[in-house]
Structures are given as structure tokens and as C-alpha cells.
Length: 445
Ligand code: UGA
Image (cartoon, rainbow, N blue to C red):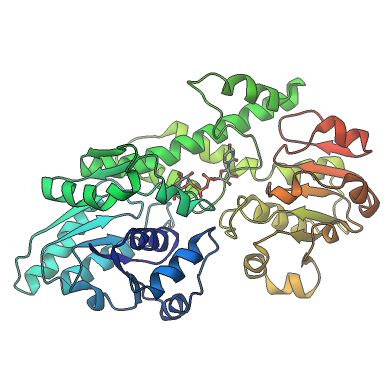
């Protein structure tokens, strides 16, 4: 099959590369010239395990093409994936500007029947807007070419995106005609050879499925963070509670880790967008609002613990931060709890020495240059270097090298033997035996 994927972000690039890997010819289109030129040379805009190999391999074998011009791709393609960003607008609603611009360009260039697939996360009803935009431009060219609009939301996780695409737990296809259903089935067949996992539904159902999935996961996390706050006040260890409830199959062990709040490009944005969709439909989404509010509060919890420990006297102190990415396995810092913590510490007059195995470059771009220049924030090259003369070590992202640290070395390096464990990675009793003060999330100090 010949496929075009518009947008070479996480979703677009992974989709394009994985579909090419299965023997299809794929044209990846992006307006960003530098990004396209880099991709041609095997330089990827994101870090994602396994992605570089399949991009380079499929590009050199002629199955994966990169271009800035949709018309280069359009001649050949029967399926067009729209995988551009839907950033939150001022009010939290998904900004559809880029999605609709791509739809118009498809209408401007289409020469034969096609299927237009929405992979971006978009509000219910967007497929209708895409259909109108394509039809309008076709009509302006005096053409009556048949096309369908399909909703095929993506469920990949950053850090495991290639694996998720190659081994999907489900493929959701919202389509309103048999031809579109057949083409989409054929396209995904190689990914689900061992077990059929395709779910067909209405276009609007598929659009809602994506939001509901992310909102449900965010709800589990916020719920657990709320229980954790109660545990702290009741002399209960949330880690035992997690194990105790996770063993109930109806609850399950996934996504019930208390921590310092969820981040990333999806949960915060999608929960906000769903709240906005509700408001636009005269509905007060009380639970979703609470999920968001709890998460915002949770991101301040590590700072609050430090502030309480030092009686509000943080100015002039230095703190070591382990982990900057919003989760392990990625260099992405969008909405990361580390950003809230570091901003609060520096605004309180403290200094920060931070280390992350992968996100150091991202961090240098994230914070004001003056902070780096004046030494308020140092991004260091080793995890133990971060701890030198610091008044506490704060674990924010649970990268593997942070999980079993050399506590003796840490004790020697730190000014104050204090560990704030934002992901409940450490055995509290062991850490205390090593001579540290310890604060986790949802457990006693
Ligand atoms: C999320 C979903 O998990 C994917 O299924 C979805 O496709 C994707 O959004 C998307 O819409 O594109 P992602 O944002 O990559 O994926 O990250 P997650 O692994 O879901 O983690 C999100 C955040 O929740 C992280 O900050 C993580 O630390 C936090 N988290 C996760 C917890 O605090 N506790 C948990 O138990 C699990």
C-alpha cells in the first residue's frame, strides 16, 4: 500500500516508520524543513527506543520518504494519516488549526479516491469538520472525488512507542463504510497476526474512546495520589495499599502508583480538552475537574515536603534533583513535575543541581538561560555529581540507574542526609538505617 502520514511528531513518525517496516511505501510530510532534512540524514527530532533503526533502515531501502510537500506524496497514496499536533488553546480546548489545514491541503491536491485518517487526538465531531474541509477544496477545484474520513486514535506510550505500535493491544477504527473498514483492516493485519484486536465503531465513538482512555488512566493516578495524601495523615503506607487493591482483578496493578503527578503531552492536555468539551455541551464534569486539580496540587507536593522539613527556609540552599523527563524512557519534559519543583525551588531562592540520563539537553532549553548562566540551575553529567554538597536529594523520575543507588556514597556527598522520594522507589527502613531522613509519597517520614 502507499500511505502518506502528515506530521512527523511522536505519533506521525512512529506510525510512518512502523507501517513502512511492514513493507508499505510511506511518505512522511512535515512543514518543518529542518526536521525533514534531518530525518533524511537519520537525525530524529525525538528520542524513542528502537525508532532510529527502523527510520534509517526503511529510508535507505526506499520505503520511507520524507518531504515538505504534500503534492510529492499525494499522487500515489490511497490512505492519508493526519498526525499533527492539537495543542491546548487558552481555554484548554484542542486547537484544530493544524488538523484542518492539513485537511484543506489534502482537498487541494487529491487526484484519486482516498481515505483520510485522523490519528491526532481530536474532539468528537472533528471528522465532520475534516470531511467538510476536504470537500470544500475539492469542490473549488470542480472535482468530485470519493473519500472517507476515519478516526483511528493512537494509544502509544512515549518510551515504548515502537513496541506499542508493533504489538497493539487494540486497534480502534471509527468508520462509516465497508470500503474504509476493509482498507484499514488490511493495513493493520500484519500487526495483529496472532490475535484479532480490531474494534470497529462509529467515527464519533472512536474519537471519544481516545479521550476516555486517557482520562480514565489520569483518574486512576489522581485517585491514588488522593489516597496517598490520606495515608500520610493516617500512618498508612500507600505502597501496601497499592498491592492490596491491585490484586483485585477489577482494579488491577496498572496506573495506581502514587507519585508527584502525571505529566507528558497527553494526559494534562486531554483531560483539559475533555473538560472543555463538557463545558461546550453545558455539562459540569466534576470528576474530571477534580482529577486535574489533584494533579496540579500533586506536582507541588515535593516542594512542600522540602519546605516543611526546612521550616520554609530554603533560600541559599542547594538541592539535587534526579530525573527531569516526565517519565523514564523519554527526553520529553512537557508538563513534567520536575519543572514545577525546580521553578518553585529557584523562586524560593534555592539552587538546583539536576541530572537526567537523557533529558539534559531538553532541560537546558526548558529553563531561562540566565538561571544556567548565574549557576542557579546546574544540569550536571553524573547522578552523584548532582548530590555534592546538596541539602537533599529529590527523586522525581524513576529511571533505572536511580533505583538502587549507592547510599553510602550519597551520604558522603550530601550536606544534609535527606531523601525525598517522589516515586516511592526506596525501602524506607533501609534508607533510614543508612542514616537518612526520608519522605516518600503516601508514607510516613
Ligand atoms: C499516555 C497513555 O498511557 C497512552 O496510552 C496514550 O496513547 C498516550 O498518553 C497518548 O495519548 O498519546 P504517555 O503520556 O506517553 O502515554 O505516558 P504514560 O506512561 O501514560 O505516563 C503519564 C504520566 O503518568 C507520567 O508522568 C507518569 O509518571 C505518570 N504515572 C503513570 C503515575 O504517576 N502513576 C502511574 O501509576 C502511572
